[in-house]
Amino acid sequence: MNVIWLFVVLSAISAFVIAAVSVGSVVAQQGVKARPAVYDIEKAVEFVAESLPSEVTAQVSYEEVRQVLEWHLEFLEAKGVASTHTDADLSEDLIVVDDAEPIAWILGKADEGEVELTDEHVAAILLGQERYFAHIGAFGPQVNSTVSQDPA
Image (cartoon, rainbow, N blue to C red):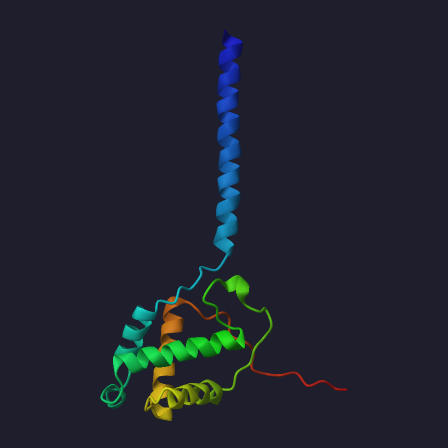
């Protein structure tokens, strides 16, 4: 009878140790992973609209802010740095985009849709969106801006 109790106690202790090690290893793996940034268009519009300078808010509606944000997300997805699905869909390659390129792309979309926006409006909205990206943790580590010269 004592052998049965000994077996039960050892089995319970073994099960606890295995469970603790399993849970601990999963927690350690998850602790290393970056928390995914989730972009919520409603929150982004509100955040960006509230951060705009007063001279821009006097000329740009919430709907226009939303449209610029959506166009910018389309631009980022076309460049391969954003996805509507998961970060696994993104390229690991370094992608460099000139600061003026998204503004020009968005202004082209605005012309197609007959939305009247100036360069200054778009730049202010994109600056607000950049702050929103930082707020939700969507930026990775900063890339070193020096480019090494190939001696060849």
